[in-house]
Image (cartoon, rainbow, N blue to C red; front, side):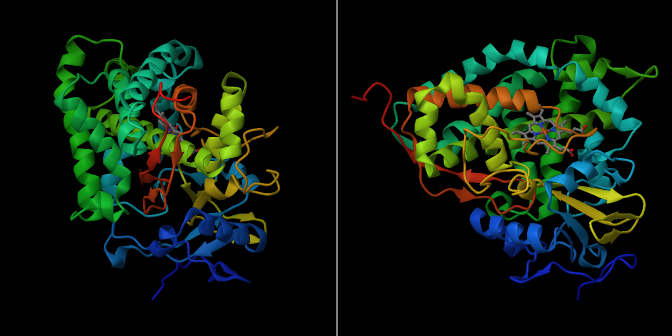
Length: 433
Ligand code: HEM
């Protein structure tokens, strides 16, 4: 039986196409085109839709009782993102609810409101400024070049295994201050497992909580191991900045540091990993777009990266909780209701994007919401992610321009738009006639 919060109306996303059940795990096993079609119907017929509690094993069934509103229009998602006083992040940022203690251990300032959000986010601002990102650019390019050199002669292979998994690990290892070797491997592997709690392949025999909590504990252990040394000999890396940072004369506690590190490690690794796989898949589905890029990489790469982000929407949603009653379109959202912002839908909104179901790197305007709808939680790593995609795609399409992926193995997930493996073929570098 579906139980709705007492404050919420008994509405469901009924459409002329029947009941679109975003809460069902089964919905998230559908191919992307089918999901896109469902969101298209919602945008047209029921753009602010109520859903039953999401299928989830993060909480015992008797505690998983809260349904959620879905915002599917670009305009509404921007509105909610820019009004944090009405749409709070403090009760969680995914449509599935996590146990409170797990939320505290793992989500840090992404799951906070002002003023603490502003303070903790402030610690990272220097590190993520575009000026610093530009400094990192040649270094990121080096990693991209090395990785493509390691696979370009093979002619075939799983792009995810050969490149997507490795690139964020190499880049963020040094950025975060991880020493090479076991700690590095363990940390990056944990960061890339964390968001796979809904995917049977990532979970294996573990329950959702065992997978998530296990990965988070591994990330905490990294902080515990490295903290004493970083306190004694701070370097030029994120962990060192974190231990030194002060707000109102106070440093972060060890628990705050662990959650902060967990947030950054997960936010940086999994998103960029899947974004690079989404890019290769998109250009394989639309070879004419790949030819356009290859013909003028320098001139088209920036627009191509934006289109990859729009098309791939590496994070499918973020969630807020209403702090007061608010009406969006004709729907009365009550204080305490969960509100999910579907970026994947905003990025296909026909009121904003011409021919949204086509991957088109020549779009004149591309105000996608892949990094959020603006407002205080806008992605901190946007410049870094863009730099990484720009460098990688430039390397790939300069050196193995005919790379073509076949059928991806998509992750079963309602939060991350993941690709677990992506078989591909290409003419080995240096053998093209
Ligand atoms: C293609 C890659 C990426 C995508 C699509 C992405 C997307 C997002 C989105 C949608 C949000 C939430 C925005 C909101 O709630 O309004 C977010 C927040 C965040 N992202 Fe990213 N991200 C990416 C890469 C990165 C990287 C590389 C880093 C770090 C190096 C990073 C760090 C963060 C952090 C720390 C937040 C929380 C910001 C806050 O709450 O103030 N992200 N990201």
